[in-house]
Amino acid sequence: MASTEGEFTYRSDGSPSVCGIYFISPPENLVEIEFTSFNIDCKSGLAVVVDGWEMNQQFFPSPEDHPKSIEDRLKNLCGRSPSKTFVSSQNVALIQHLIAIPGEGFTVRVRFLKNPQPCNVISMFKRGLYTVKNYGAKRNCSVSIIYPERVRLLSVDVGVTGHFQKVEAEYGIKSNCHRYLGTDDYVELAGGNGFEIGFMNVRERFCGLESNVGEQEVVIGCQHSSVRLVSSGQFFNSVTFLYSNLTEDEIGREDPNKCIA
Image (cartoon, rainbow, N blue to C red; front, top):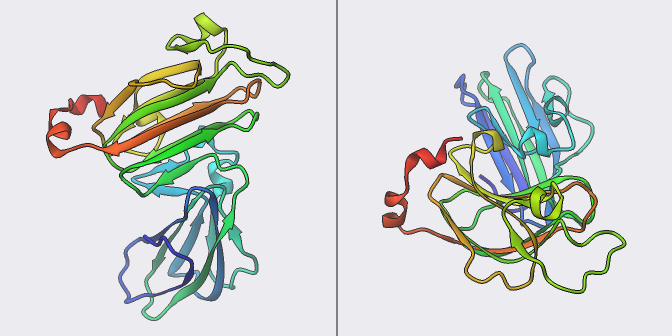
């Protein structure tokens, strides 16, 4: 895993194994990848640039939450050196490669670019404070934390503040969003042992408007914790939350079945 800008070189030792370089930038950035040297024979090797991360055949962001299809997120490379740079749609990208001929390989120059509207994010930290927004757009945004976590909601504005609506009072937060607010917008807290939403167990769903939620927290003792904001495009949704890592005792007390969808 690489979390800094710079040049990275891989040269094969002849091992016929699939390997990968996982790039991660700060949440407010995108990852730009430029190949400055490239030597992979198409008969025995291949490199794939992935828009996002892939692990155990699961992708982040989940296919249903990404603006591109899986096919468009994968760029297969061999033979001639790529003539263009690749820019990720979120703060993570991946180069997977199988290079069986010793000495063959590549060098890439990696830069972090400013993302004016960060949506899907992987956090490399065990604790922190983050706000996820939809910026009024119809899209789903997930913050994936690759640790067991305690997630505490600090403020919620989901399914209430419309494009031309002035909100005079707080509604509080609700768990049955369609019933109470007539909206399909919500924030969900989930956990699982993989990246994709379909393999995660949803613990709670909330919507409403509350600037000081207080003690609303969810304990997620899984390999991955997720805060996912689902937005119809009718509202300016935002959620601010605090996350902190669990102790070994807290993880041990968690039911492992809660990490299976």
